[in-house]
Length: 260
Ligand SMILES: [Zn+2]
Image (cartoon, rainbow, N blue to C red):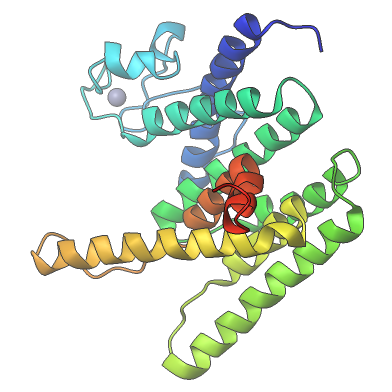
């Protein structure tokens, strides 16, 4: 389309920041069991209603020094983190895909992944209300994307199937739960989004990133800093998927030795 990059890129970043603000609302209200539409934005500590200038993505957090203006309660770092992440990914998607269907489709699924990941980080749940409709929409998206619907369907079934097998095997061998059922449902969505072609890279990357994180927390817990806690896998699957979407092709080419 005919929008110059000098306008599209900043617009994409700002759109991402604003969407991030909305994702924060979704995450907070899912965690606290409130409705998304009502009431308006407020401090979770004291209920103080936020005026427009306390509600500017990313910037308000810094203006306010990370504290509520009314009760001085600390604002969770999650808020600026989600906004910055959403803004940055929107910008990178814009640069990679330009203004078009691919940008919009991936931006939408980025939103689902961010909301699901941050909920998973907090309470170890990947909400069905995100993953299941997300899987269906990812399959529908194959009809407007350069991905055959058969490949999308196969990706969903294969991705979820592999994770179901892993879950059963882990349960059988270790007698404890390793993979959550939420991860299997998330794989339905991710497999449908990338097609079966995306599975090798996205599963490998997520496992590698998850392992690194596990090692990091194990080292930390040796120093008595944190408890040995389970690590939610959803955020790593989300990261693996985003890396595949953005750079999957280059990774394949590199792997196959075309880039020497
Ligand atoms: Zn407050």
